[in-house]
Length: 488
Image (cartoon, rainbow, N blue to C red):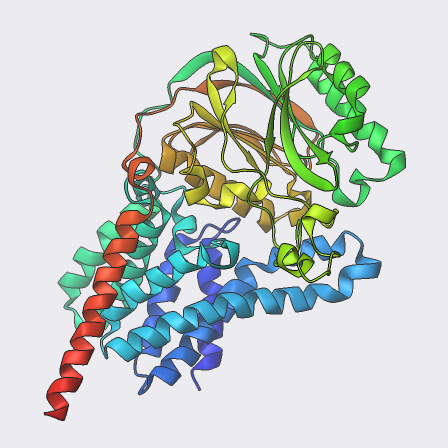
């Protein structure tokens, strides 16, 4: 029975993701899984193989999903194992479809490359999308990861899957062919980006990390502690140049923005009139928004960005608006059930700092959302509360995805995370300065200069949608022609 070995290979492949970052292990495990799967005599058996491999992969890569349920373990802890199983099953179904469709279209393993890449692209969009732990994510710190600037995450998925399928076919190659194939592949996967240090501007940003654990973040006895901590970090004297702006993380204050004018004035006073960008919740009538706001020197709110890509079941219930049409209002955002989505990607004008594209938490996972900005920004602000994701793999994988967005756009990212990892990231995805997980503090970091617009920032995912459609369409057409010839 091949299912158990494939589950184990999937678990090994997941070690390519942060915090393990064993990308060569991932490639080898993917290649071994393809090699083991393709004696399958039928598409059904190929689907079982893809499911087994995907289940092992996503169970390990997404094991951090238990963390939100452990914030209040007494009430919700029992759900944690079910969450892991459901998430692993969901991801495995996608990969099962990839293996099934490839086997249906061709007996050869090469058909798996476009089918698997297409399924990963679909996973990034369907049901609001969840491209977490994509194969391309494991390459962010390597030389190969720099191709994100040209081909984006789905192009890199195509390359990584192609490399793994090539490994599966090595048994048929000569020893020289294996060396010629594996040595360059190993180098581009293991070598870090080969480029000059980032060019830095004269602008200084202060990134504030209060380290408020999720189980204490809304505790009335702790709220004041975390708030005062952020005030003191904002007021702290600079070691060199004074910051030109201060960034607090997502939901940095526990009070509604609508009732916080005195609080906002206090924040601006502590910042000495320096602009502060901070996360807060706000309301309009019965609607609630997860927002990022810019404060002026007197604590006035000068700009507001509302998060538009919300977390299903975490920030809203899917189909809640539809259910409200039939009188079921308990899930509808317009009736106060969860958050409402903002109008979409927007830029913040920060004066001498330039224009920034704000992202709130989950939004950094989606390359196409970043590409949807109305104009090219000068840099990206990522405000997040990764305390939900635990203290290990979740926050580190989220950081890896933020680094991907920097490479894809050729833009620096200023990242303020509640419990970490706060970081200044250069346009090649390299971390220039950071604060570790579970550490309270701040960093003053010079803002890197942006690079020229990347190819991916100009084209987005469209070329890969077209290419994959042509390749898969060609295989479908070939299969139809072969069948017609057999019936003649």
